[in-house]
Amino acid sequence: MNIAISDQSLLRQAAAAAAGGQQYPAATLYLVATPIGNLADLSLRAIHCLGLVDALACEDTRQGGALLRHLGLHKPLLALHQHNEREASAAVLARLAAGERVAYASDAGTPAISDPGAVLVREAVAAGYRVLPLPGPSSAAAALSVAGDTQAQGFAFVGFLPTKAGERRTALQAVLAVQGQSQLLFEAPHRIVELFGLLAELAPERRVTVCRELTKQFEQVHTAEAAALPAWLAADAQRQRGEFVLVLHAQALQATAEDALPAEALRVLQLLMAELPLKQAVALAAQISGAPRNRLYEAGLAIKNGASAED
Image (cartoon, rainbow, N blue to C red):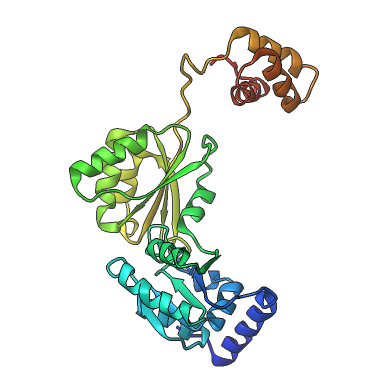
């Protein structure tokens, strides 16, 4: 639904006031992150930029056109999707060669993250044009922020798993074997039952945060062990609808014999920690013992938390 014309004008004025001070050079490709469900998530900078560009390339011209109409804007639309990205990139480059500003927006979220856009960026950079990002909505970032995965030391973006059953199982087994990182998966509603069944079978104790319909009216976030997910899904038919983002919580890093710190290095670290802040104690212990600083820091944290540094 479009907002009133007067409100559109006020919105564009607010966007210009907030973002107009920055330069928006010509002959530049702008990657514009667009809402994943809630139109209010579109940034003022994105609104201002969309008003400035000479054309909008988009994954779906119907979606792109609806977004422009919502803002009271009218721009030429160029279809650029996974099936024509290489060919359509040439049309964008032609406009850049003429000195135009061109924006690219995928259907929802940030371009080139499980969406088209990477080929266009590569071609534009290779041709010598600037590519500027306008960050904003991202289902991956949103899901990570509400997962509360305290075990994670970073994350890996997996996206969609293969659709064929055998390849799907193999890929999921490889994902589950990774230690120390949150794993981000996307899934469509017609495959979510199968995926939950696989997770319950292969990693029943793994904690999973399920994000459904993020930012939309009926969004839902649920965290549970994988074994409980099939029953949770079956308890309400509504839970099988919409787009899903899953965060597989990190599997704790398992210490190996090669990783184990020498007893003398631990003794030195403990003595230094009794007198110095952790970072200084680690730095000195590394110099004295020759042990890796990152392993000493992990051991120091364990000591501070009351755990055994040798576990």
